[in-house]
Image (cartoon, rainbow, N blue to C red; front, side):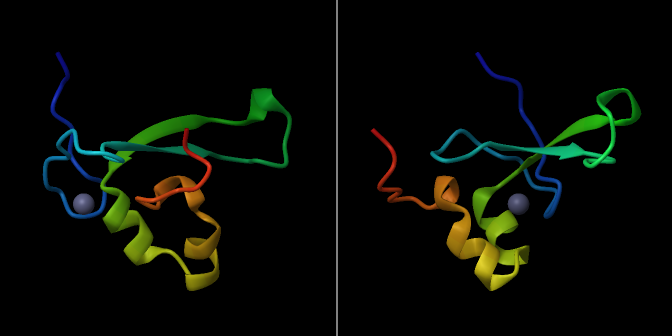
Length: 72
Ligand SMILES: [Zn+2]
């Protein structure tokens, strides 16, 4: 059983359909000590995230691509 989640970018429900739902982890103060950092998780469609990333970053986001060669 899973809980329905909302995409942080489009506001629609993120159904279970590979690679969705995706969890986007935000870590603040990345260069600081862990006690000065905070972490929050957001849900997203892979497509919504990819559509908002800079093109060079999209190319590096291998886990989000449907036919990822690194997957077993
Ligand atoms: Zn979305």
